Length: 148
Image (cartoon, rainbow, N blue to C red):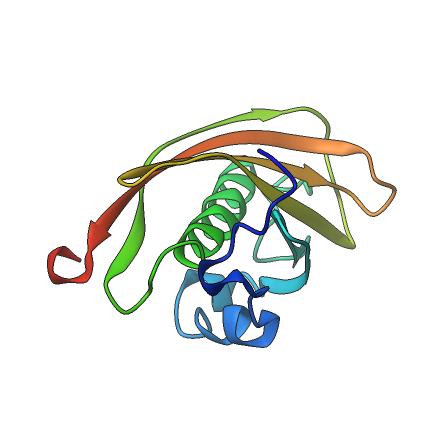
């Protein structure tokens, strides 16, 4: 997308509110924390620990997908009038590139398309060294709050 501000109302989202909004859901269980954002991107982190690893000690692919969908969904929700609309996931795919074993992974979501009823996001998950762990494409339906 262009270098314009994509956030509803033209102001960057409140990162603490983004984190707190999911405290009682999977976001909180996975300890996802929103850490930074720019005019057209958002970044969060998730620990690689006993909640997110598979039995062989690697970051679980499902945890990566849940992380990508969380970051994309939250970002999508801040691009619409939240008093009228909500973004819900329609489709997600992920390519798992390399393992992560500990520390944190960081997801950066960027909008590819922000339509009236559909949004498409790319989410890159990297390890603490900045190496690509997973890349995901996420499609969001924008629906009225009455339908949620």
